[in-house]
Image (cartoon, rainbow, N blue to C red; front, side, top):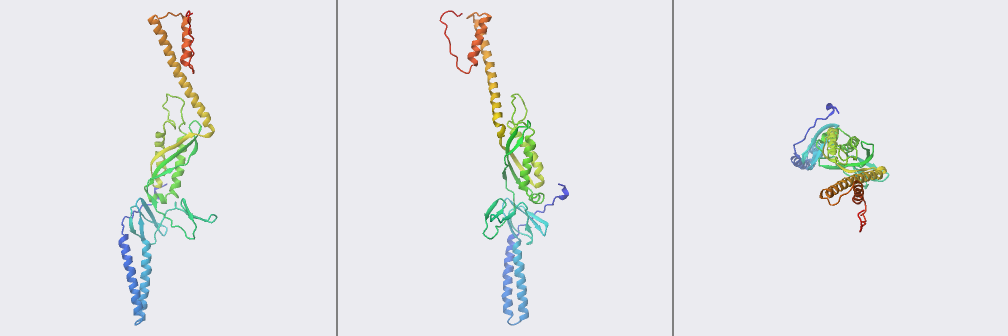
Length: 334
């Protein structure tokens, strides 16, 4: 978005609602006193009495309209106001304010929809029964820290394998004016950009690698680093909406159902091969140590054929899945 299209923020800081409220109450009381005085004077001087009645009526209407300019903003809230279609100002701090009574709070992300079919009135994500009167819609912008649990989605990793991935995004609105004017619905905008960021980053890395000695980043092994990259990219995308992303976390990560069983078998096979390799390496070392020890201590002298038989027997014992059943030779060793 071009800089010239951005609305220059006007911050309303003067919380003068208390003084305005007191002035309106006094004005209403004075108007009522003038109305009573006009009714009394009408008996003696009808022209003066009618004049007082007209003035009091105008003052009552005027001060009644002024009550509409009293605005309350709670902590961690902001309100963006427009006046006859033009940007009027933004209230960021909690307090009791008095502004132009014809200004209205503007927030297009808050929708109010009548559903005639179901007879329900919806405000944002909530619904209440239709009792014949519409619920009051709060169009203020919340500046609280919010956690968005982004839906799980199916993406392809760097190897083309379908992966189910879900994220949680911790964010808040830091510029209510941009959030209201630069995008139609900043909540949907953030969710859509989050989906795009997940897809862009997931396709750059494999889910897992079958090689042990490798520094290649994977979705499973380098989730923290990848989540940090997601956060930076997402922040760049949503800064125009006045949103600050505090953290992105990968909450769900798994192979898709159609390949989950096959990939599990592959992982099991890889684990079995790696375990067998370790067992064989250890068994060979133990056999070599046994033969060398027997030769050094001259416990028994074996020719090459007997050494080969001994190595075979020891490997069977050390590498077998079941315990070996020994056979005791009570006569000759041959």
